[in-house]
Length: 276
Image (cartoon, rainbow, N blue to C red):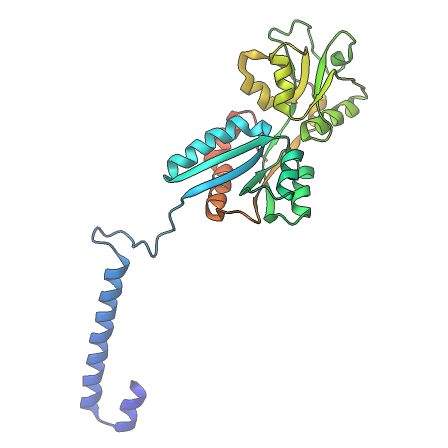
């Protein structure tokens, strides 16, 4: 507008046009204000974040069952209209299901090794983040009738001991702890996930099992936990990631954010997990 006024040299016309422009800008500003705010003064839906809805499917290590179930309930309360469904199991089996095309939005593994199965297959979106760590503990029968106090005690021929299969994180950690102690142990069975190993003790089908501290914690008075120093040599990092073909990417991001938040960490550490 200024360039036109300079060419014509008509001050009155410039003033008139300037006033008109100011009025027009004022009208636009007024119009913009009314569209960006509701009658109650809150921001319009156009500027507010999209409301989350629908189902978010989470594949998670069996040891996360109790804490993730609690976080799923919190997520649904915070985001009405959403539903969190879980598939818990051995991390290796879950990874195989994901790479085989099973529909899921989030994967939380009990070890970087099993997470690598998914990332190597190109099924992850972004870089996995470690959100907690976990340590082994010996689960014995209530009252510890066999007086187990060390890892070496499990090698006694009279004890029926259960381990996780070596292909799953809890089994790999158990083997690492045994190697650190220079011990060999032949279990009565290898189980496909940590919950299955613990159940053997709960049902008194085994005298002891090497499981995670979090599982001993979750079992309450059904078992008794015995700490052992070699467990420090076999601490597992737990990574979490959104999956590439997530059907509900927004909800997946929000669930992962909850897991990694202060609130999520409080639930997880309360269950016996270690901070990353």
